[in-house]
Image 1: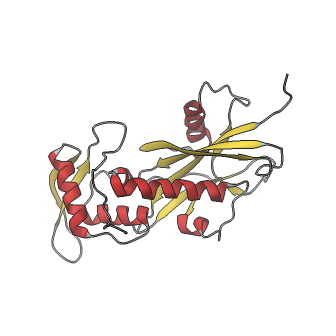
Image 2 (image 1 turned 180 degrees about the vertical axis):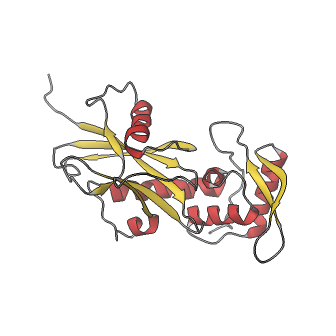
Length: 234
């Protein structure tokens, strides 16, 4: 019988749009136990540790409920990373999930905090284990999916404008996007019932009133387009 033991965990990269809607923020949890007690890390749990988990999805739900304390609008498994060095307790592996949150999502207490995603990607904020790498993997998946799907709309408020949608897409991609191309996508989604024209308008301090839309997904997965949002080579 093998005596090899591997520590398995599930970690959550939970993202929301910052209040200015121009960049993303990631949710961090202050660790209560060793190793790395007191440090900021991704919210996560040991699979089948003190609590029995029947699946990775069950462990992810538990991490969201107990550690992140959020209810995501969208959740997707991204990757699994593992080696003998990422955790001082020994050989370990982590399955990473991407969670997209309501832009109005707030956290309570001093054990949870949102920080700018770019600061983690640039390693200005250093996380324990290989959590910086997990954040990179989740961001890569989000950017790749944004090019061909409606996934960025899960980050928007219940009612949003075209400019709001543009801000979300650009935050996910980390680059500018053609406004006309995005408008065509929204119109396509409206025709298929994935976006609803609310008939309402907001009134900005400057400029004309803007039409308000609502994202009404027709399934658990985002809508997949047959063309890239970016120009060839973009």
